[in-house]
Length: 252
Image 1 (tube, rainbow, N blue to C red):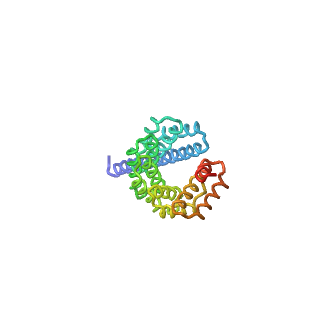
Image 2 (tube, rainbow, N blue to C red):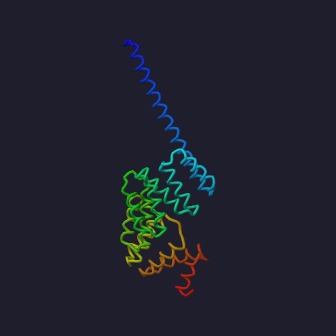
Image 3 (cartoon, rainbow, N blue to C red):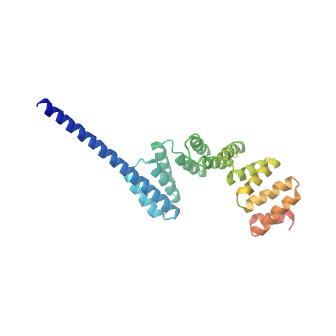
């Protein structure tokens, strides 16, 4: 083989290898997009409570890419809805094994664990999610962690997580309400008033929030504010258990 022919053969082989790699890369991109689309469709079907169609989409997505983190995360959520805890946990674990910094999956897994009484494991998942500086919704994990630690009867730790949520979003209604509850329970009535007032500025009136506000103002001896909140509770939620509590408490 002369030198020119040898060079041509090598060049052809190199071009063929490059083309093969490009085709493989293009195929992987198409597969990833397909998995992403099916996962998004599944999430949409879940929102509409079409769980059977969501399951089909996720099964197809995982058949293409079994270790896709987000597809496994959504499948975990779906399996919770289908009341299959064992499969749900398997998919959350696969999601995190494939992508350890998938903080959305960690948060969802944390909620799953907390609801099943595995509080220490749940906190570990929330804490790890919050440690990720690229996590887009740390407020959610902070609130979930705080709520979970209330079940553990650890109010100081719960407060830490609610404050973390408020650092991200100072107008988080859930975090503000929970901080009002924690301070009221600790007999810190002025801070409790501050938090419930901030809640009232951004959240909706609920029987629970109005009754809490009434109790805070009663503890502070602020009769006018107490009467104002009581009027709102009676007019907006006359048949609520909280309105009945208020009636029993005030003697009618």
